[in-house]
Image (tube, rainbow over all chains, first blue to last red; front, side, top):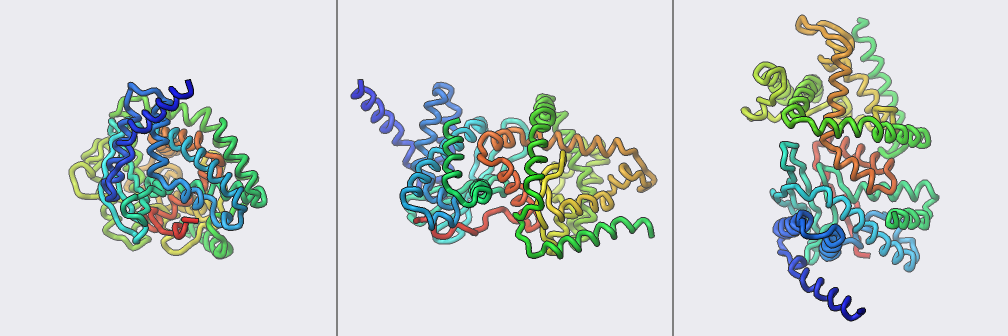
Length: 198
Length: 249
């Protein structure tokens, strides 16, 4: 039975490999990746669990979750033990993926279009896009902070929705928890566990 | 002279508070414990009243929703006119006034946004808190008001000041004559209520998603409020590089 599950898992990963290969040019990278994600989310033949698994797989490959976790934690990360930092990284990844799949599932019927890009530095390019619903509701501007230090493997580090940075918002949430608990990282880890298990 | 008394008092308070809080960072709290309690009350109010009403509103025909949104946006342009002028943006003030007038007369009282559909006018919304921000007045500390929600010292003072700058508030809330027209206070309350429901309805998915995915909803709301205000004052897009240096280790 274990063997069968393993073969099924390998098949699943191989079958999803086409999802993981996107263009390295930031604009095309975002366009292909988001189109793929929207297709997965709007595919009625897939169960919610399968959709979440595929989205998590896409995110793990294309979002710089570790760096995003460090940004969110702030400078306190530099004073943490390696083992605590590792624990934080693991919990942050689970927290991020749960939060991402929950957020994205609510936007599966949206139309998406990349409208431009601006290179901010050698390491960062901002890709501009717009999202609109089927009705005449206002378009939403979504900008993507793409990390391009390795030009052949761009990674997403932030989403800026109508000028509001999700990473910055998370960072201030985490800072608030730390501030109200005398910078005790264990309390933050407890909060993350609570979110993951709910 | 009495006409100018209250705005003068408001401005004096703003200046005093802004000077006394000049060294404070934007994220400083005035009284966090109280604000968190008020925020809990506001969230409960949103869960039981504003949220359900906004979802009912979202079920109305698209034309009705669009019309409501257009009317409230058009009335909001009246407040932008004096604020553009205070910021020295005469052409933006003309755009706001032009869009308001076109929509009022050719868009059936503002139900249709004719100005956006048939002209190149792209008016932006400005209020007194943005005007003060442009002149360098800092946020002051942050707190939460019952029903009205997140704010700062500067923004609360500006909210009061806006009722003196806004021709619609002058005509309705204070029932002064503007261009031989006056209305009653209920018109102002109706406008503010419709504006709040329209905004809540438009952002229902985002707000509910935020509630579900935040580990500290109070801090998330505060962050979003302050980011939004900063972007509006600086006319920026939120793509700044702060804090995105070396994150590889």
